[in-house]
Each structure stands twice: as C-alpha cells, then as structure tokens.
Image 1 (cartoon, one colour):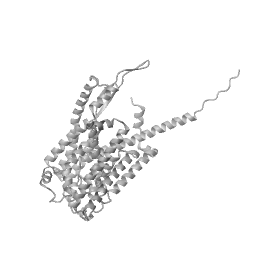
Image 2: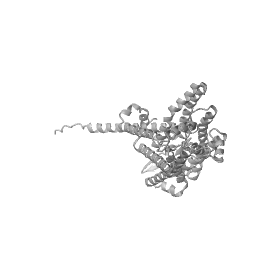
Image 3: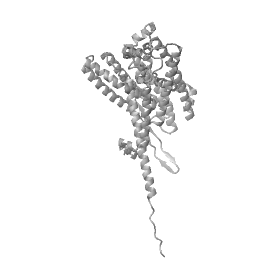
Image 4: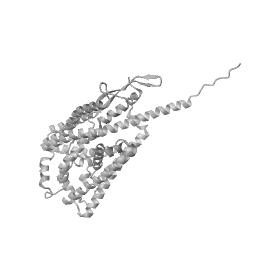
Length: 454
C-alpha cells in the first residue's frame, strides 16, 4: 500500500520549480557563489612569472594536470589565489573525525550536542589554517626552486602564503554559506564545479589526439562507452543497500495494547563514500606534487626511487593504491560512519532487536559480521572504480586524467543535490496543501438556523 507522502513524491515534477520561490532563490544564490569561486581561480598569486609558469605547465601538465589540479578547477595550473583549493579543509575534517572516534575527550565533546559540534568545527578550522600554511609554504619554496617567481625571497614567500591561505579560508566560508543558505553541500559542490570546469578542455584535447592519429577511433569509442558504464555502475552501487530487519515488541499505552512494528536498518554497500579514495590519492600524489615544482638537482635519491616505483601506472603504485583503499574503507566505516556498538545501544534503548539475536553485545557482533561482509563488496567496488581508469590510462596513453575519484564525487554530489531539491519541492507542496486547507476552513460558514416558533 503506497502512502500519501510517497504518492506526492512520485507526482512531484520540476515544473513546480517556478512556484517554489524559496527553492529558486536558493538555487540562484548557490550559482552566484559558484561563479565567484570560478572567477577567483583566474586571479593570479602576486609575484608569479606568468610566461615561465605557462611554459612549465605545458611540460609538466601531463603529470599533474589531471591528478592534482582536478580538485582546484585548474587554479593550481594557473597559480590562482585558490590554488590550494578546498582540500586542506577536507583533510582537516577527516583528521578531526578520525581523532573524534579515537580520543575520548573529543568523543565526549561530540555527544554534548550543538555546543560540542561548534567546538569540533572550531578545531577543524584551526586544522585547516595549519595544513594550508604548511602546503602554501611548500608551494612557495617549490615555485622559487623552479624559477617561477619574479622576485624570490622572504617577501615572495610571505605574500604567497598569505594569499593561498586566505583563498582557502574564503572557499571554506563560501562552502558554509552554500550549505546554510543554498542548495546541496557547499564543500562538495565546490569540488564538483572544479572537476566539471576542466571536462570541456580535457575532452577537446582527447578528441584532438584522435584527429591527429595519436589515438585510434576504436580507443575513443571504447573510452566513451567505458565512462557511461562506469557512471551507471557507480550510481547503482551508491544506491545499493543491505537491509537488516528490526522488530519492535508490543507495547501498552494506558488501557490499549499496540502491536509491535517492524522496520529495516539500511547499511550502504559503500558507507565510507569517497573518503578512502581521497585519502589514498593524497598519499600517492604527495611525492609527485613535491617533485613537480622542484628542479632535477633538488630531487634526491629517495625521491627518485619513489617516483620510479610509485609513479602513476607502476605495479607498486597500483598495489599500494588498492591496499590503502581497502584499509581506509574498513577503518573509516567502523570508526566514523557506522559503529556497531553505538547502533546496538540505540536499538536497545528503543526496544528494538534483530529477530533471533539477543540485544546488546550479541547484536553488536552480528552487525559487525554483516558490515564486514558488505564491505568486502564495497571495497572491491571502490578498487575497481579507482584502478580501472589508472590501468587504461597507462595502457592507452589517454591524455586527460579520467579518475575514479572524480567520477565518484560527480555522481555522489549530483545525486545528493537532486535529492535535496526534490525534498524542497515536496515541502513546498505540503505548504500549499496546508494553506488551501486553512483557506477552506476560513471561508466555510455555518448554516443559519431560523428561530423555532412555539
């Protein structure tokens, strides 16, 4: 039996967007801030030699253009004020979340409600400033080593650090404003726009290689089909759930006895989302990022060994990438996104239980067993999506970086934003129904009764 809410959600159409004023204003506000972000990627850092940077990026862009610059929307290649992007904030958020699950003081702070959440957000901002400062200093030194600064020295380093750290903090503020007053998750949308903005240029370069004969037409058709299949596969896996049946006992309220209900506890096949992919990519891209702006003399034997054996497409690179994805999938799921002990305690407090399993410790062990089995499929799915583009890019020399991380982010953000927009439309329909019912109630008049004659 379909409920009235489900029928209304099924009948929700995008034609109602014109009537939903609040949703339209949220979408326009979001688009406006995203335009501000894109304009900031074209504002250069002071003291950069533009001609030397352009020539350097043309030679080194094959190595970092798709991998590192993917999250910055091309700002790193142009050395704009948003060259660091939003990644320091994401890294700080992930680190704080992991520490919250391991440090008792932070875990207790998380349970304090709104005040604890504000305190954790404050720690995240402090961590963002620290990470952005370290990365900005390393980037400034690397620019000087690559002879890309017009006037190298302490003044250039300080100016570069202040500009890059300020750009990252401004992006963090933009993301928070989009989340509060716009539509969708602001931080995710900033990364999403940065990835989408580089797609037209990458496709143009890809098809230009096909016209020149560097890539055969069969490879071009195969890559296009692979992109479509991978996107469909990611959508299917991101929506896949393992439902655990939950039973609630009968309860007595006053003099009435109510039958026990039943529900499902949904467990996603990929509870960790894109976090394992981002963490593994960050670790593997660290030596490439450090050596990109360094001269040959600055690259020592250790760095040369790392680049030789852990370079993109190398067997050790792919093996380490696979191990890191599996490790972070299990680690992040059991420490942050799904804690079996906490879920079992909440079920016990609500008088819910898994049929055939005793509440408490036995339920926690059963949930851990189920999630472990689900994560085998989830981690294998992440490994397949992440490694397939790497292998094909190394075998067929595809000129643009078609990464699994970018596909996961684009698909996840698109699904989340559409779901939020549909929720706003559904709420608008509810408000319209309530207003109509109130107006009908006000206009309804009671029939006048004539006085009874005796």
